[in-house]
Length: 99
Image (cartoon, rainbow, N blue to C red):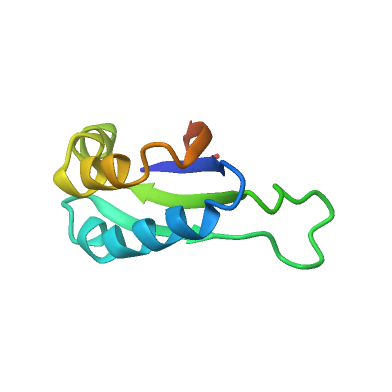
């Protein structure tokens, strides 16, 4: 199993656009073979180290690297990338093994 933490930083006033497009693909991604968990998260009000008002985090779990690789080339993710072109200022993707 792999854990993925993707931190998306939006351009000013674009986080809502990115979140809307992300939420639109969540049900489709959850149906992909090998997807265990997939969904967006935002800072909690009491977070001691917030990502910030222009950021959101996608929390993912995949059964294997092959499943993750298929997801990265799947139509839902490609549609999300196309729909958010120009709205994303930065992206950091962390692929982790469970400890």
